[in-house]
Image 1: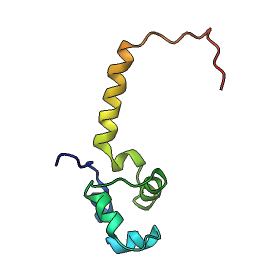
Image 2 (image 1 turned 90 degrees about the vertical axis):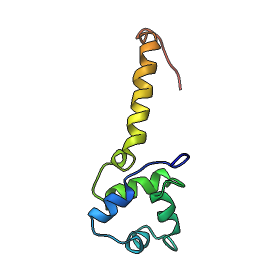
Image 3 (image 1 turned 60 degrees about the vertical axis):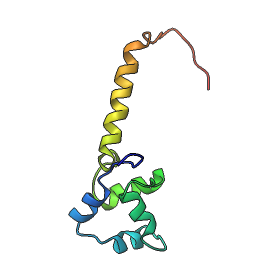
Length: 94
């Protein structure tokens, strides 16, 4: 659906045999509404929650949002073709 962020949260949760209630308890969420919105792509979890979910589901974070991961990867591969080679003699200061 347009405007929704595709993900595999529900797939991974079910493959681990967890209910939404169980995962919500592990994440210390007050109820399952946030988890449901994440799974439906209506909203996205914080980066910390993505890492927690990846540990709970025994996978790498990018596997939870694989379509987004691939689209970002193709953005960078396309933009890298337009960039000039990195000048190793340049100094950068933080």
